[in-house]
Figure 1 (cartoon, rainbow, N blue to C red):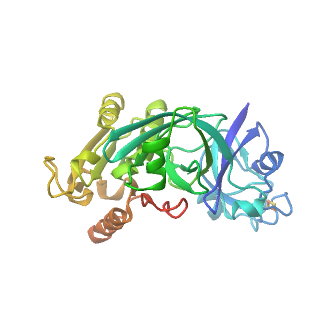
Figure 2 (cartoon, rainbow, N blue to C red; figure 1 turned 90 degrees about the vertical axis):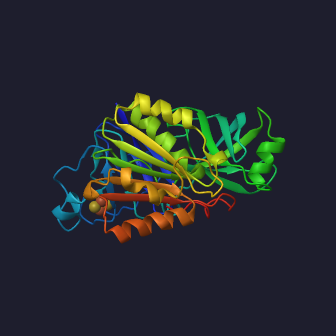
Length: 342
Ligand code: FES
């Protein structure tokens, strides 16, 4: 028996290691040639301190209070030299990946499909040549073929498959958009580096509010697919806002989730003045149906910076403090790593 441990580094890089039954995270990482911070490896110095809010594990009783206090342990802090997982876990490592002699992983793949699903949105499907582990909601940097540049895109497919999909805004004149629309052919090779990002689905323990702007819908598709697979029954409500009617895509997929997931609902809204959509305006104007439950809700928000800022302002003004708030801003044509800010 072994468990998948996602090591989430401070610089946004995530590396996955396999941890054997009874093995510590520190040792499992070391086997994978990842040198996590450590000094004593005996639970004495506290150098290996990280955090784990996702997964089951045993910390034993060998470590001392100076290394990890009871209060820290209650808050989810862990010592990787003592932590023995009994399920898949996500461990936050408070240093950059380069400090641990590791970095972003690269996987090659080939273009399987490029579909212009609306004038403004492209669905890209890639067949990866190797397994690529990621958490639902994370992104990769995809190199634009024929250039040195990369662009960051969230997976819209769920983890566990080499058939990867992405939802990409069709930016007129954009480097990736131009390649996808004008040149890409089935079988073309692409290189992906990742996964990255701290915008990923945490354990679902209370109602979820999902707020998507434009192609910021992509990570939610991966999350919803994961929730469906894992049999999640807690309420989840998505508000999906776009600028123009043409920008609304993947509605048939959302309809399917609404049928297949017991407590999932969604609404769409369009902000453009020319829109004929029945629900006009910005996401923040349609929060009345959202399950805010006086803050007993986990909020996930992904969209362009003005939308994210508007939603953050909305919560501030309303004085609502959700149990947790996770957000990611993106700008459709910026170089990778500048467009994704978690
Ligand atoms: Fe010293 Fe873990 S390495 S407490």
